[in-house]
Image (cartoon, rainbow, N blue to C red; front, side, top):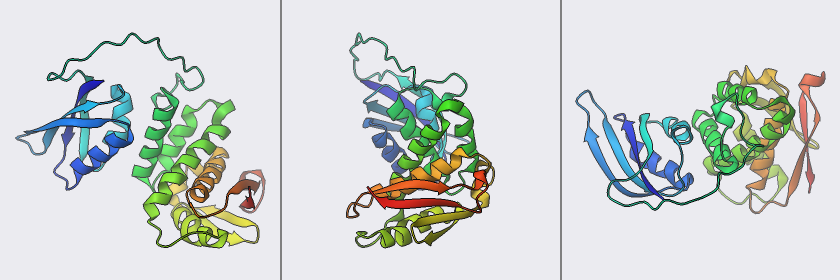
Length: 257
């Protein structure tokens, strides 16, 4: 379906490229674009897009997190240059993925998770505040599982951002080249005989670290990093010790799957 999105951009290099990349990840193709220069500085970017219809909240979270995007002005508006066919579709029933307490946990599961992960990536390594917000938005009974899932997706995208040179085909290399560099801005991480150990948290995880489920987020992140190393055999991450349960450190055992 085709519709129009309008963004207010700041005078920051690379803003347009970041917007285009973000829209592609959301499944949207850009079929037309124009600019409106603002007298006070900056400009409005008007985009004709084609793809799944996302509401303003679904667009605002990932787009306004981008460097150079001041705010989303309008979204999900029918493009004037192209007629749109009305589809008679039954509403999608998503009772397990729509929560009433926070907008960040509402909507289609796949799109929602992708947006949340992009938001965390845009703030990395300073993710404590957003992680705490996500923790609060998830019903208590589902927090451990959801934080693990979000961590796994976050780790997968984070692996790509590391731009590792060479082939990672052994666990030791995965720990040294992926897990330690990715987690070091967040926690005090080291290798031990059976996996990796987290003995403390940096200021980037200061407040989120108070929540036990954030250890599940770290477990998911480690799993996502390992799963993204194409040449590495499959490994399973298991948390065997936890600071929140009285241990001196959180230990994550890495075993062949």
